[in-house]
Length: 237
Image 1 (cartoon, rainbow, N blue to C red):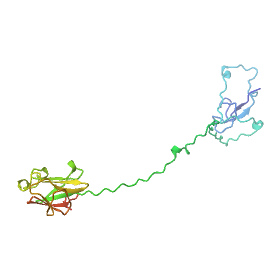
Image 2: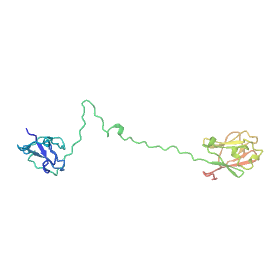
Image 3: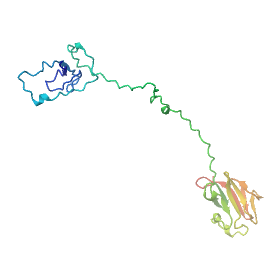
Image 4: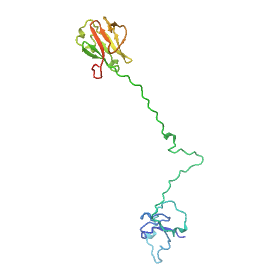
């Protein structure tokens, strides 16, 4: 039984590759291969075979799986305007007895999780900046988060008071007289066992006492101090 050969109806013999199955020409787009009887293309009786005749014909790749045998395909006219049918993607092979795995759209790890709204944290208390007015000079109090826990030291030998004119020559003021320190965000004044005492609004104190803007302090009998609030640039409000 002779093998059926399909070739391009447009190209010259040998110009376009032939195929053993129905398909389309690789050289002339959308040209459907036509069926040809190999008897018609058989060489004459006196033809001497050459090495070129011994080479097998290169089959053109088909556009899809080989169709069923159709006896009317030889007489059916070619439709060059018909595009090749798209091939469907291969379906996965399902093994019996094994549950189907969820796809990417139904996988529980890939489902969008609802976002929890971010709750605003507690509002920070405003930063309080205080200073002491001593002998007409402004003596800022260090903040709670600054060196040594902030605060201020009062006395003739304290470095914090070195910039106050005349303070080092006051005999009534002790060398280490009092200390101002922060406790839970509030400013307190504490006497350090001085000889002449520390006063808040005219009353002598013997324990840490809370102070703020508007309070008047007195160290010994000669140093009157007023507590004021300052801004971020160090100027009184």
